[in-house]
Every structure is written in C-alpha cells, then in structure tokens.
Image (cartoon, rainbow, N blue to C red; front, side, top):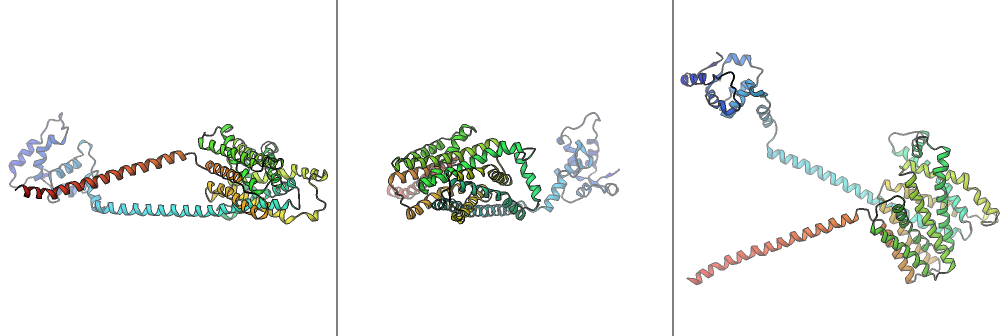
Length: 493
C-alpha cells in the first residue's frame, strides 16, 4: 500500500513480501537476522503519500537520496521504525550534521593546537612577568630590610654616645608601633575595591582575638605576654650594642632562626630536619668562636650573652605566637602590633620614669636628648618591622630573610671605618659559620626531594646520551662494512 515495486523487480518484491513475514512471538535479536530483507529493501522507494505524512522525519529525505548503501539503509530503517528503541537522529544524522558543520579533523587539530599553544604561551608569559615582578620587589625589599636594620643598629650606637638610656629608647621606639594599624588602613583604602570604615575594619580584624573580640581578658592573657617579650627583645639588643660592636651584635642575632627551629621542634612538634640541626650546631659553634675571638673578657661575654638572650626572646615570641594565636592576616597583624604599643604606653611607661629617678638611666636636661637620633631610630625600626611583616605580600619570604644576613657585611664595613674592631681569623670564621647556618635554615622542607629529582633527571639524561652515542658508532660500522664488501668480492674474483 505505502510501498510500490519497480517494474522489473516483481520477483524480488514477492520474495521481500514473503521474507518479511515472521512469527509474532519470534523477534530478531541482531541486525544480521533480517539482513536478506534489508538487501531486498535496497530496491524499494518511499511513496509520495508517505512522504507527506512523514515530513517531520528527516529520515525520509535520506531514504530518497542517491547512492544509498546497505549500511545506511539499515540505519535509516531502524530510525523510521524505532526498532530496538533506536532513537532517530541520535547517531547518523548528528554525525552528518557535525561533518557538514565542523571543519576537517586535520584543520580542527591544527586550530586546537594553535589555541593550546597560544594559551600556553600566554600563561608562560604571565607567569614569567609575575615572577619577574616578585623578584624585582624582592630585591627592593631585601635592600630595604638590610638598610633599615643596619641603619637602626648604627644609629642606636651613635645615640648612646649622647643619650645612655637603652630602655628609654626601647620604650620610645615601641610607641611608634601604634602607627601600624592606621598605615594598614590607608593601604586598604587605596587598594581594596570594597572600602570599609575604620570601625568596621577594626571589628573585622578583632575576630583574630576570638569571638568576643578584643576584651580586657584577652588583652591581658594574649597581648600582654607578647608586649613583655617584645620589650625584652629590643632592650637586650640595644643594651648589647653598648657592650660590643654592631657587627658582632648583628651576626649573633641571626641565631634566632636556629632557636626558632629548636623551639618549634620541641613545642610545636614540627618536622625534624637534619640540615636544620646542623644549622643550629653551626649557630652555637659560631657563638662560642665569637666569644673566643675577644679572649673571653667580661665585657664581651656580657655583650654576647645579651645578644643571645635577645635572639632567644625573639624566637620565643614567634613560637608562642604560632602556638597561641596561629597565623594572622595583614590587618590582624597590624592591629596586634598596634595593641602592643597600647600595652607599652599603659603599663611600661612607669619603668623609664623609675629608671630616671633612680639615676640608672639619667640625663641632666631634656635639651641634651638627641631627638633626631631617637626619631630616626624609631622610624627605621618601624620600617624594618613593616617590611618584615608585610613584605611577603609582594615577594618571597626567603628574600626578606636574606636582608637580615646582608646587614652583617654592611655593619662590618661601617665598623671598620668608624671603630677599632679587629677582624682576626677566628671572628671571620665565626661570622661565616653563623651566616652559613642561617642560610641552611632558609632551605624549604622539601629541599631533599628536589635534590633527588634533580639528580635523577641528570642520570636519565646521561643514560639517554650514551645510547645515542653508541647508536652513532653502530650506524657507522655497517656503512663501513658495506663499503669494504665490493672490494673483497672484486678481489675474490
């Protein structure tokens, strides 16, 4: 009815009619079971009436197209009848549409390769630019840390010639820490897209102290102990400058990195690293050699003990901060340092007054106080602490630590021209040993894994180069034998 025969294919049409009759309870399980009928359907066409009824089906157009093969007919019949749940246009039509719309595979691969290479080049360019910026800012920060730390040390030494009051100088410089949070808020206003009021920013940073913020209890339990450690660290350091030269003070203070590792290993249960134990041994050996360089005089021994005490207080400050408070963001760290200044003003102010009236730190009149030196020392120390705490936002922490080591040769050069320091062999070896220990402490925790990977890659490259060289030699031997064979054959004949 809906299918008509070709004029010269009557026998085949009858065979097709008989072949398509199957028992209703038996259904074909695979396409090969009805392959004879499908071969006969090659010669059938769709009637015009069925075309009108099946305009919605895209398979009608495919059936009437020219040069239809057996496989395409099988697919189209299954698409029309829905045999075995076959979904129309799910495979062949979509594949045809994709073949018409999409470019050739080679062109697509070339386009994808070009896009991929472009993305890789852009990513590499961005990474290289970012790294260059970090290195550039790192060099600037290193120079800033080195100059501020060595400058504050030299200026403190110069101040004590006119104003012999190390604790008063410590108290005066610590008060300048109050500027930390205002300076941070100015940076927040200029840099952040979502600007907050000072009160909102303060409340947000106060969450660092707990859910209740900065209460009176938190102030005395968490801020006050660190205020005491901060004051002791700076006072012992400045008092040591009175006893010994600034070169020895700066190099011995570098031992605080070794003390931080030892305390972190004992208190915080940090990972054990043999190279850092070696660095700690270097630091202790350098301290002993530095004491021996001056002949174990009481004056130098007291100065070295003061510097070692200052380095120990600094290490204890850092370890306790990590143990009790954890890690702090930039705003939280700025607020914490400003709180230390408030503690210094409220509870430490009485000590310089007591020292003045007891004439331990006495000066005849306020006119002789070198206010320029005091303010300059305070500004340099504030700059040093700002770079030390906030420099990691723009560069690598290792580069910041290098600035402290570089302050040692700067102080040595200044001491060589301004004081009577004697750089004998023992002192030079002690400086080198302590500096080497400090540099070993800057190694990352996974440094051994990186070294093993680097050595493995070098071995693999050597193994790859050796077979290539053997291949060249082996490839040359057959050519030589081929060249010699004709002469041998000719000689035989």
